[in-house]
Image (cartoon, rainbow, N blue to C red; front, side):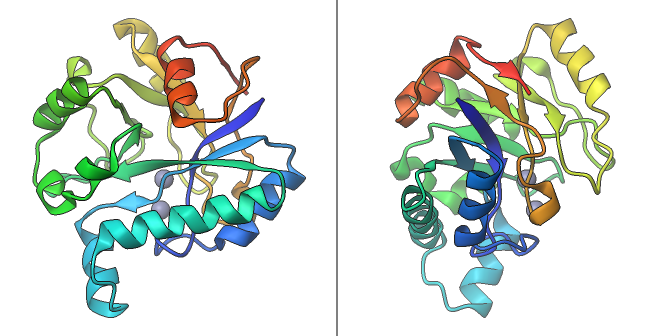
Length: 219
Ligand SMILES: [Zn+2]
Ligand SMILES: [Zn+2]
């Protein structure tokens, strides 16, 4: 199976230029079987949606837009699962999350105020996975490897230098789980990179187990 673990849709991400339908179409065309929607999950996005677009609850809207992407994907034979790209209020770092429960995500304002250290403890307690996205891109700061399940060692966004070679060396040095994703925001990004696995992933539980077991190769 070909999987992209890092995809944005324009319904939630202000920097995204592809709707759920366009994303689904592009990924079918690129031969992908599964994509994980990881829209921006931070104060900036929540504030803009709530203040400018009249969204009353950011989490509810975020989840509805995931369900829309899932519907658009499934209508074309593409599996779609949900994730998050969180940014905490005190830094510009981005982190990818897989397997966080709806109940926890619904407490978004509280999550945005957390430190990576405290969020990491929450992830361990609740059993979801916490990776730093593109940790060596300009403006990012690497954090204590002990707080992370892993890092994104291959980010496909062509408008940024994510220094993927350094990220891969860092993951190796600290024995961290390593993932890859396109960080798709616009048509030329679709299917830029991802992972491939022999497993048949249909559910979030199966995705988490694949990630925990490192049972995939980076494309
Ligand atoms: Zn973005
Ligand atoms: Zn992203």
